[in-house]
Every structure is written in structure tokens, then in C-alpha cells.
Amino acid sequence: MQKEITKYLDAQIHVGTSNSVDGGVDYTHFVSHIQNSYLTDEKGSLMVKKKSVTIRSSDGNEFLVSESAAVLSISLMKILEEKEDGLIHLSDIASRTLAMVIVYLNTHAEDGLSEDVKWSFDHEFVSGKEFDVLTCFVLAADTLQKTCLFDTVAKKMADIMKNKSVEWARREFRIENDYTPEQEEAIRNENAWAFE
Picture 1 (cartoon, rainbow, N blue to C red):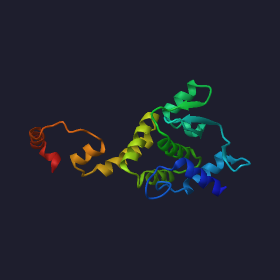
Picture 2: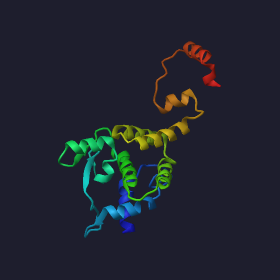
Picture 3: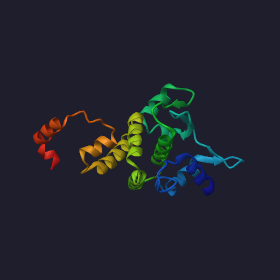
Picture 4: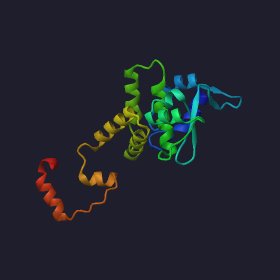
């Protein structure tokens, strides 16, 4: 079953970082959850064995997620309370991001994990991610109203932004500078403490 799990994760979780196929996330953290949540069919494909819901990403890909993981998101929980068919369309979250967020939800839904293990997972989840990937995660966490994911990603982003220049922030957040050089100088003089 380990081979099927690795194959599944390779297909569902790839986030395109240059370091590794899984973007720095260690598969061993997910093995027990997947073994408890999935069965393999005669073709070796993984099938959800617990009550599940289907989540469709903004680019039309569908993901099965256990209901116990889905209800960790306030938004998904509210949608599930109102819907009967179990299909949730998230028009703001692309497949690449959604696959990783589902891994996050599944791990946090796993029975018996201590807070220390979850903290370690959270730390590893954001380690080595590019800033634009973290931006997608924080936007997804906001959409899903998943506070602990939002806090984890926002803290990592704040750590990255620490001691960066205004120019760096403008470039990363794609903010156009509409100040004249004179206006910039006046702002720097008025708020000199911020530029020390």
C-alpha cells in the first residue's frame, strides 16, 4: 500500500517547487491517515472508505476528502450543512493549492495526533515554499476560514518579509509605485523610524 500512497501523493500534491516532487512535505506524515481513510480497488487506485465529499477546484479538478477533514474548515462545514449532494465548488482555489490544503486538512483531522506533531507538520508544511505558493495558501485559508492554516502561513510569510525593502514588497505583491520621488522622500522623512 505504501507504493499506492506515494503514487497518489505524487499525483495529487505536487506543488512545483524545485527542491523535490512533494515541495518539501514528508510523505510519512500522511501514510497512517491515508491507510485509515482509503482502500485500493482492483486496479490499485485509492478510494475513500470514510464518508467523503467532493471538492471541485477553480480549474475544474475534483478531489475526494473525508467529511471529518472538510468540516475543519468553517466555510466547508457551512456549505455541507446546506448541501445534500456532497459536491463543493471552490471558484477561488486552484488545483495545485487545493491538493496541498486537503493534505493539511486530512492531517489535522487524523485521530490521535498530538499538538506537538501537528505543530511539526505545520512547520514542515510551509518550509521551503516559494512566496507565491504561500500567498496562494493564505488566500485559500482565508476563503476556507481555516484559522490555524492562515496563522501558520501568515507567520511564515511575515518571517520571509522581515527586514525586506519596500521595493521587495512591491515586487512580491505586484504593487505599482504611484508616488513621485518627492512624495517618497517626504514619506521617508516623516516615518524615518520605519526605515532604520
